[in-house]
Length: 266
Image (tube, rainbow, N blue to C red):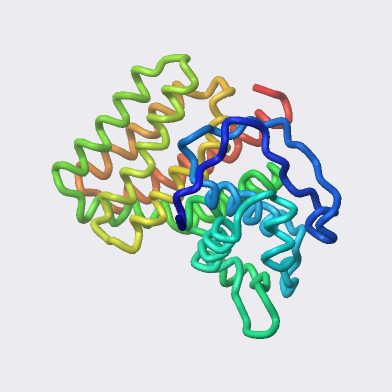
């Protein structure tokens, strides 16, 4: 039945670059797939999607035929069809009559999609990833803070304050700090009361995990807490210009912190 197959509780062969090209070479990942829980077509989509994002299939490339994919992956036509349909919906692929399934240009990919984000993070070198994330944050977060100071409702402020308290309570525990820090920044976008900012906040909650994991290794938390507190106060007091300035200060110091940690390790 379509979409109901699951991965068996054993190792699955996953195609290598050569296998994708000729349907003959195979390799074993050594990774045990989750039994019974993950639909097979989702796993197939994960393999295909990450290969496309990694660049194993450049823009304009025609993917191997359905039967070849079935043979190499050892899955049903239903699983392959469902996987390809999902990647088409994400903008990575398109189906053309008499030509097959073709990789689309990156400008058409849905970069806000959680899977596309994950594949991008997993396949992008750290330096490039960090630079692009800071470009995005500088372009959006100070303005989000400005709007939040103008439009935040009591429940928005409480959400932000709760995240700040969680940062304070985290102490030296990295996991708790990262989760609270992510929640704090996401709450700023939600507090804009602008639904076009909300997807950016959700996207950053996923894409910033790697960056925050790096920054968590530093010794700057006391200063970072003060900066987050200043930003929270500016938004809570309805001071948009001050909120924007506080956000810029926080981002500037965060960039310096990460550069220092990557060079010195702390």
